[in-house]
Image (tube, rainbow, N blue to C red; front, side, top):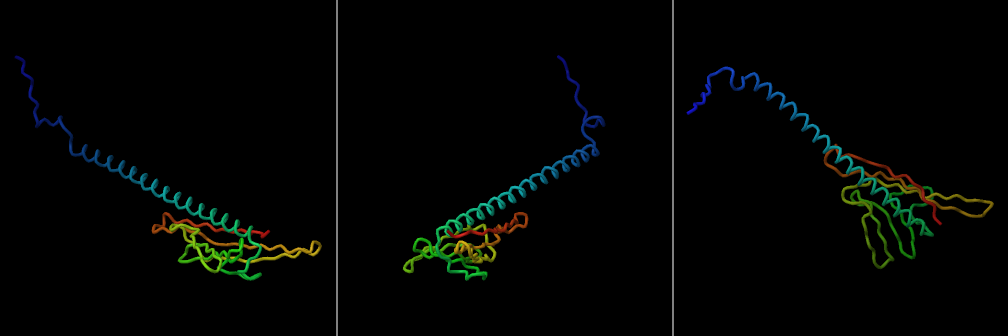
Length: 178
């Protein structure tokens, strides 16, 4: 019967030395720092991308909604010619349409004097800072015609608790009435 030689545990050449274990732990710790930093960077980039996409979508939607209403409006009652206002009021198809802000959210109110419906133009994650509406007119003497336009300026920003997700974009447009 073959007997296997028994391993000796007190042999200095078997196992790991304390120095080898410390080097291994240091290398592993360095790798963990690099990997966790990568995950944090990816999370921050995803948040910034989400904020940017949501703000840009809100700007596009608000621009198109205001443009559609102004194109269908024969009359803009607020703001008064040449003055800035935080409210835009017009008549569209016999209805009064008003754009203003409430608690930082852009809203659209539509009514006929009897009933009014209110819809938020921006979502809960996108806020609007002090919209400015300016009514402009240009009189063309040879054609004996007046062109009315409304200039719209407002800043949209992402409503985030983290500064990593901070993003803002400003809408600047002028819409001519038909």
